[in-house]
Length: 156
Image (cartoon, rainbow, N blue to C red; front, side, top):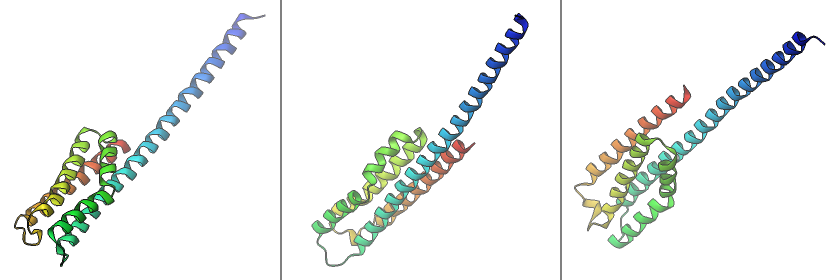
């Protein structure tokens, strides 16, 4: 038997298997990256939605007439809890990269500050309300920008 033929066949087999493995690894990486990006998109959208819904419900509660301070404070707490903002916040802190996690936490804390205004004597006449709403709006804008940046970076 000719050793050259045997060596050539073995080398061809090794090259063929190596090329196939490299191609499979590359495909797996692309698919894994696409799945990760889809999970992030879903989480980011849900978190922004929860924070936005909380903002709108708190704004509506502030305008509600005929409620006592205690009723408003109770409803404000229920609103924040009912939108899944707490649950999604913890997911964000686990999944999001550092700067985005910081922006997510900052936005949540501004939302909680807004909720806490209902503990005051008369939120309907609260002179700090517009400033609180502006702080929430700025925090959400910064969060959206950080989310877009992260999703664009993972796309590349």
